[in-house]
Amino acid sequence: MENAGETPSGEKEFAQSTKHIREIIEHPEISEEEFREMLKSAPFGYTKGLPYKTYSICPETRSIVQALVWEKNGMVWITKKCPEGMLTEVYYEDADMFKRFSRWTYDWKLTSFNVENTGANCPLDCGLCQRHYSHTSLLNIVLTNRCNLSCWYCFFYAKEGQPIYEPTLDQIRVMLRNAKKEQSIGANAVQFTGGEPTLRDDIIEIIKIAKEEGYDHVQLNTDGIRLAFEPEFVKRIREAGVNTLYMSYDGMTPQTNWKNHWEVPLILENVRRAGGPGIVLVPTTIRNVNDHELGAMINFGLNHLDIIRGVNFQPLSMVGRVPTKERQRFRITIPGAIKKIEEQTNGSIARDDWYAIPIAGHIARFFEEFTGKRYYMTSHFACGAATYVFLDGEEVIPIPRFIDVEGFVEFLEEKAEELSNWKRLGKLQKLKVGGEIFLKFKNFYDEKYAPKSFDVLSIIKNAFARGTYDALGEFHHKTLFLGMMHFQDEYNYDVQRVERCVIHYAMPDGRIVPFCAFNVIPELYRDKVQAQFSYSWEEWKALHPDWDYKKDKYIRTKEFIERMKNSELYKKTYLNLKWYF
Image 1 (cartoon, rainbow, N blue to C red):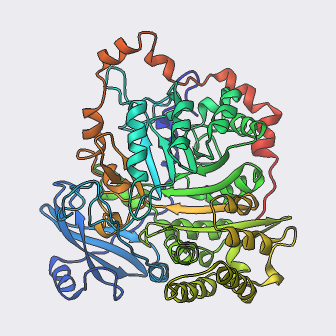
Image 2 (tube, rainbow, N blue to C red):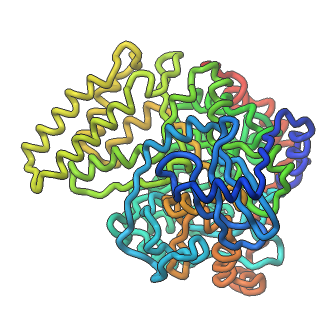
Image 3 (cartoon, rainbow, N blue to C red):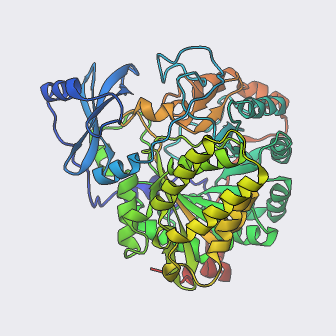
């Protein structure tokens, strides 16, 4: 347990968690000659299966190098020859899932760019440029590099005496506008992140600016500490326009979730009383550290379904220099985490219940043709996976158990193709098409296995009939979203993934940069630009004479832990849970 009376850092908890390593991923050997031969005959890009060629980056020199994505022992690997030698890293722990997910590849192209280069040096000159395929599905704006925690592994937060990055309100507004102006579709969702964004005194004003600029979805990426102790603040951010709290939650115990285990009961209680915003739990998932608790975290979400909207697992991105031995011990990929969930939920949430994120692009294409509005979703199929589960009484039912997802999406693809051939679609024709889809939908819907406690068919009909952001609200309130989002690092980097990234960072210099460029090559993007726009320690102190670095830091006391441990609220939150698996 963290030394009470100190700012949580997690160093001791991590050391304790890694005393007993349960499993490692052994990397296969491939000679330089084998690599060259396979590279010579492999096509570029995932067009004809495995193996294929792509580009990657060298972890040491940051130079762009050719890479081979290939299959061995039922897993997918990426191998590259760097100036320092050969390097192989696991790409996907399940080759069959990789191939199934690739079916949903969906590409488009931006028609507006923030930089004028050709992208020939991708990912070393991002902006977005004409080489990029995807619009901004979720815009990230870093509001501050100040933080109330002191996580031992984090190089991002400002330590005492270091420069403070905190963009002005005008800069934030311009960043929001830049993403909104993207063609052929502008950003509609923004995440305010940090550091810890709730440390900003003007956070309410920032949220309101996002709403003024036309963003339907506003979420805060937070550790939740301030929300635990300021119930009125929770109400204020909800009223200002926050839809979702994207909250760090790494496990079920003080050891695995040292950041906010003791504070979570207060956070949930305050959100309940405020009537929102909805919470998405975000576990950073690490092999041999917290991967044994993935099923329990989903069960936790189901027990608090009135306010928890989802659990979005993020397999650890190993940014920085990480020795091979450490990567073998701690690396977990999307299929590796999905396998753990299947085991830990006794098959209630199985491997085949998950789909690649770009399947949404095929659904969106129908809405584009039907409504005339643009909804492109063109992420790389290996970037993420998702499913929805319904809680029907005491039974957990993943949506693919009663809906033939693949069959229905293929049907929508056919209808989208038909609609695209009609130059003008009148209102009556649209109603006719909508009615046909609902009637045919029953062919893909198995009532025998569907939830009985509410009318799923009507909820889905309403979402399709209205085709708006708000129409999805009822659906999300009846389900638990489960997601996987595996951001890249220098070792598993595939330029084809970053070209299709849909999660972008806006920067004060006008550029918009994919997540896996911004954070993986910080010396070109995150750190460089933030240094350019930061205040020196002395400048910050002069502008904020009453500010005290130590007051930013959260101190967890022994008394608080004891009080929480013995409280009814703690028992209700963690101990008196129903096990649904």
